[in-house]
Length: 203
DNA sequence: TGCCAGGCCCTCTTTAGGGCCTT
Image (cartoon, rainbow, N blue to C red):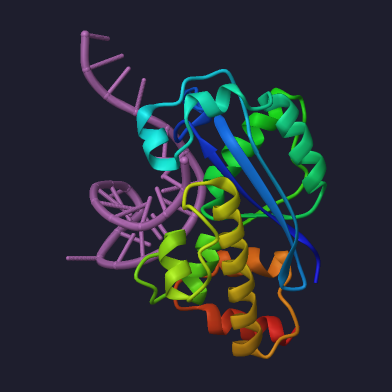
């Protein structure tokens, strides 16, 4: 199975279009059902960290001031990820910041994102919710560290991804799950996963 | 001055509105 990069950002808010910036990034490479490499760094974008964000993440302004410049971190993590397909939990959020922070160093994304939250809605439709922490508990996955820190969240999203791939292989008797199949699953209408997977098996 | 996300999903939908999820 192809290697994918599962990423997670911590940021100062919800929208790069309103001045929010990344404060931390992590990326883990997943291949053959396990994490084979990790990258994590705080990053200094020269912005203030709102108290609410410090309470949520534990990331303080003092920590950010000592961190490497955001541009250097983005160059490093983009090189680390390369052109591997990307995965994130609620990928629309991480995609916005990935594209915005890359744009600041005049680089652009070439690969697609898949979203572990949208896939989880199809694979585990009866989970109490599809927040990362709830899914980790629902699927009895290990808690990798403090929630809302980039590496812990990226590792738990990676564990969730592997868990869902195993579940799909078991449920539908398939040998593996490609990034393209994940993107297909996340676009399937509610209640239509069985029909979609049976069509895939016949191809 | 005060306000400000947004993409996607779901449904009692599509001429719309509300909820989820990320920080």
